[in-house]
Image (cartoon, rainbow, N blue to C red; front, side, top):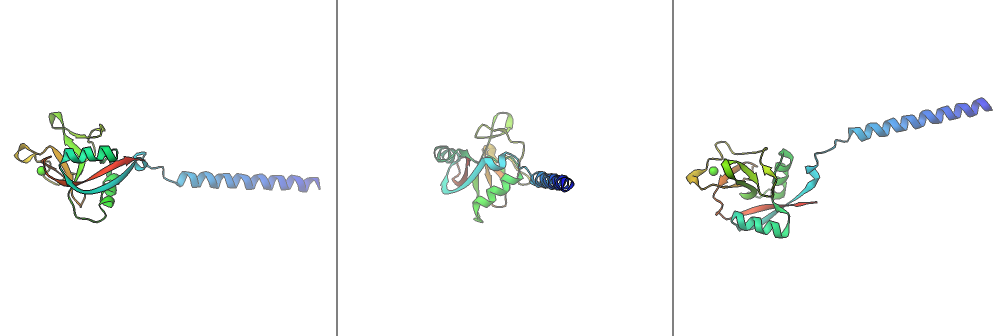
Length: 154
Ligand SMILES: [Ca+2]
């Protein structure tokens, strides 16, 4: 009987070990997403405003005009559009030394999705950025009235 008891304990330990390995493997196989994946919620605002008015609106009701740091977020912007064909303001503006800066203080835009030939600073008047429904960006005059996308930190 003593040997059977020991055998049972060994089997039990093996079982527990296997369970632990399975748990570890399944935890590792879940891709840990970029933190920014969870940091934002995008809202499409169907009210044509100039860039500054749009930003004010976003800052009152949400966090700010949208910041797009990666392809995942750019696709999320298209999701927020919900298939509507619209040119929307994003939170990107031309700062000092022609550098494109995120309006929420996120610094210089390192990830960009400019349309080919953009930003072209046409008529030296294009200080703000719009996104098309194909997810490409263009610099335009900040005075234009456009729908826009705000984001919210979750
Ligand atoms: Ca342009």
